[in-house]
Length: 113
Length: 111
Image 1 (cartoon, rainbow over the protein chains, first blue to last red):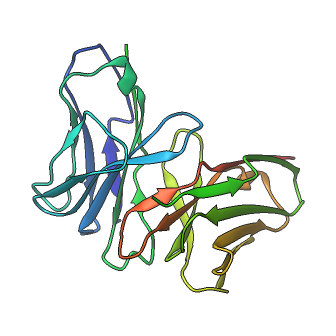
Image 2: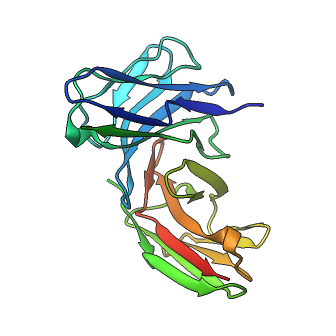
């Protein structure tokens, strides 16, 4: 079954640690996105990619980085986690025509203590 | 940048009642998407509207696009507890694949 997977679902980590949030999709979508969503708040685009070796920053400035070495994989990395990074991170993908919108993963809820 | 304003911010209705959620864009709409989100989870795609006057339905949910008003409405008929959640509208700009989202409308349905 085609889908988009995010791991871990929940992560509690200490300040200063390096973390990588995983996102993989099996639909062959060329476009992938990372959104940040604070509780009760709107989604903000922090990174996107239109294909392998292509990554761009989104509207919301973020200290995280991303990579797109394979079509299906779009991991997000925080080199040194801080409490201000506590949030929900949502990964999404879409095909060229985007008639079906984005397909979203279940999200990773990150808490930095 | 494009901004989407949703109203109301929250809504509490009794089961069986009809309701409407609105989404108004600050700029021309080239594609309007409706999503539903359960708390703490990802977004589920409901439907996409592209042409002015377009109307789509999925089960008891109907969405319309008014291109002139740069507005879309989402209507739920005979609401059920399963309809509870946060409804978000998203839109893309001209020649862009990136979606901007509204702040969402939190819907509670009381049995």
